[in-house]
Length: 188
Image (cartoon, rainbow, N blue to C red; front, side, top):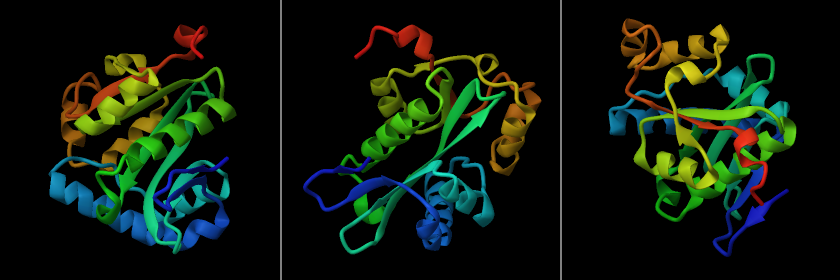
């Protein structure tokens, strides 16, 4: 499924053909973290490439094939939870609603792959919190998220990991947000 608005940017499910963008995605994420002074968990080239090969990533490209944005999904806790992570929009394409389109497509992909799973994300960005709220996410204590140690290990690459560990995973700079499909059964 593809979304296109008259800006020439397509938001699509990534596949192996998009692996050529991985280094640019990683550089864009790193640069954004430095500018904002906030934590973003670091991922490896192979990790993002694998998400693309598995159809667990969303990429935005303009009509010339230029990278515009990205997000990936991952299931945790025996597929009871799904995280939408790594949302990034290239500077050149910011302030045009592209993050909303990417996040919406990642949300749809998550619901398609794991319709009964609870979706969650960690963010310190107000814009992402607003997008999540529009999708039906609500802020929750970290205790309502997955207890899957592999997920929490991923936070080790974040500059704020010490806050998370000092508080026994109860608090961090990020806000935890959760979408529980059981609470949205009547939504259209």
